Image 1 (cartoon, one colour):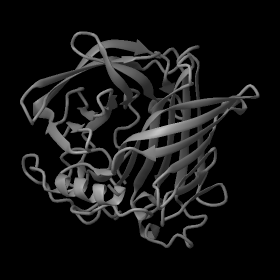
Image 2 (cartoon, rainbow, N blue to C red):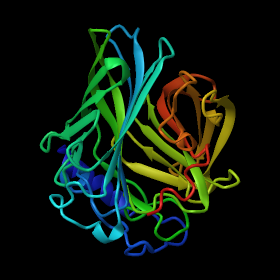
Image 3 (cartoon, one colour):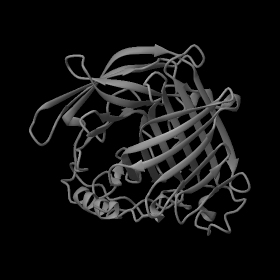
Image 4 (spheres, rainbow, N blue to C red):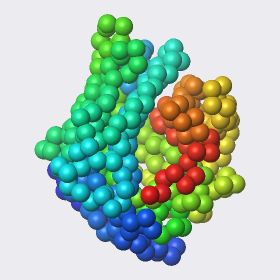
Length: 382
C-alpha cells in the first residue's frame, strides 16, 4: 500500500482515539507570543518534515542499531538537529527573510561502539545562515556536521554525519511503516500547562544501510532506526524536571514508545504514556495510570556526576486484552552520556537490549534520560 495512504489511515485512527481524561484546549499562542500547535492537523508529506519557523522549539531525531554482515561489529547511533526560534515578534518571517535571523540550530551526533565500549559524540551550534539552513518545503537540513534530506516520492532519508577524529557516518533509511502522529487529536501533551503540547510525528521503524568511515577504512553496515520530528513552543511544563523516554523495536515486528515525565520530586506526571504500534502500524496507548516505570540499576557519570537509571522495567497493561506487558531495558554499554557545552544539560542517550519477564531477548531499544543535571527546568518553554 502507498505509504501516504497508510499514514492517512493511521493518523485518522489516532485522531479518533479516546481522549485522556479532560481535554485541555491549547492556546493559539504562548504567553511570550509564540504560536502553539493546534489539534486535528494531519502531517502532509513532504512539507511535514520541513522546518516550522515561528514555533519556538523543533527537533529532528534519529537513533538506531547497526551491525556488519557477519554480526561481529555492532554500533548504536544518534543524529539530532534542534532548531530554537528567536524573538517572538520576528518568529513568523519567511524562510528567505530568516537568513541570518535569531534562529539557532544545534547538531548532536553520537556513535556507540558496542564492541570496544568507545562512545564518540559531538555538539555544534550555529545561527541560521551559511552554516545552518533548513528548508520549509521538505526535509532538507544542513547544520554543521549533519546533512539530511528526504526523497519526496519514496520517503527515503539520507544522512551524512561527521564524528570526531575524522570519522564519517552515512545512513540510507527507508520507512518500513507509515508516518505516525501521536497524542489526542494529533497533539502530544507534556504537562498540564495548556501550551505544553507538540506535533509529534514518527517513523517507528526504518530499514538502514550505512557506511562508517574510520581509520581510513569503510565498514558496510545495516540495521534499523527510529525517527521523531517534534514541533512545539512549550515542550515541557514548568513544573516538570525532565523525562525518561524509550523507543523499543521488538523482534516480532511491533514497536513500543514509552515515556515518563518527571516532576521535581521524581514522580511520574499523569501525561506520561505508553504507545504500542503493531506490525500493520495500528496504534494503542495508555497513560500514567496504566503503566509503571521501575528503576532497576544506575550508572553515575564520572564527568558530570549525574546518576542515571540506565536499567529499567516497564510494566504496562495492554488496552486490547488487559494483559500486563513487561519490558526490561538493559544498556549494551554504560558510558553513553552526551556532554555538550552546558554540563547541567547533559543527558544519557543509549543503545539497549530488551528482555521479557523470563530474561529472554525480545528486541532492541534506545533509552533517553534527560534532566538529571537540573538544567532542563524552565528551559523548554518559549
